[in-house]
Image (tube, rainbow, N blue to C red; front, side, top):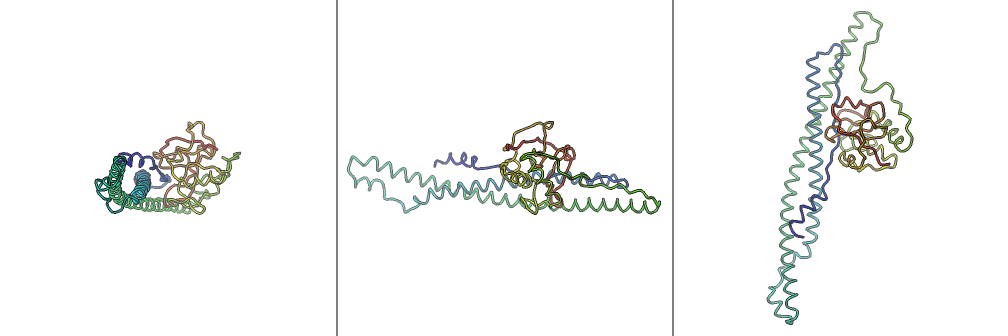
Length: 315
C-alpha cells in the first residue's frame, strides 16, 4: 500500500451526516411584551442554527474517525505478517542461492523491506490522526451538548412566557365577567386525522401520525423517542422501504429531487442546510421530531424559515 493511496481510500469510506435541529416558533400572544418575545425568538432562532451546524459537525467528525480506524485496522493487518525480526542482509541470502535465482530473491527481499517501512510509517501517521480526530469529536460533542441544554432552557422560557400570557388572559376574563373563551395557541392543528394516502407512502404517513407527542432524543429511532432522521427512517421502514439510513445527508442522496409544488404525502422535506428533515403529510405541513425539550409534532413548512428542498422516496 503506497502512502499516496490512503487519502483516496479514506475519502471513499467517509460519509456526511446530519440529524436534527430545528426552529421552534414562539407565538406573540395578545398581552406579551413584544420586545421580550422578539428577543426570545431571536435567541431561539440563533441557537437552532448553531445546533443544526453542531450536529452536522459532530456527525462528520464521528464518521471521519470511524473511517480512519477502518483504514488503520487494514494497515495493521497488512503490517502484522511483515512485522518480524529484520531479515538477513540481502547479500548473505543471495550468496546462498544459485546465480540464476539471485536477482528474483534480491528483489523480493527489497520489496518486503520497503513494504514494511511504508506500512509502519502509515500506521504511525494514522495513529496520530486518530488521536487528533478523537479530540475533535470530544470537543464537538461537548459543544453540541451545551447547545442542546440551551435549547431546553429557551423552550422552558418560551413555555413560561406563554403561561404568563394565558394567566393575564384568565385574569382579564374574570375581571370583565366575560363569557368568551380566551384565545389560546396550540402546537398542533385541531385536526390530526391522517390524510387518506394509498400504498407505501400511506403506511409511512400513518406511522408518522402515530408518533405525535413522543419526545425528541438525539440518535433515537423509536419506538419511544426519535430524532428527525430517525423518525423518517422509521416511518418508511414501517412500509418496508429503506431511505439511506439514519442521516439526513444520506436520506437526501437516497431520494429523488422534486419541486415544492410536486410535494405529496410521504415525501421528505429538508431544512437548515440538510440539518433537519420531516415527512410531508399534505396541506403544506410536515411531521417531524424538532429538538431537545420538544416532541414529535406537525408544523407548517413556512414556519421553519429554511427550506432546502424535497425528496421522493424510491418505493
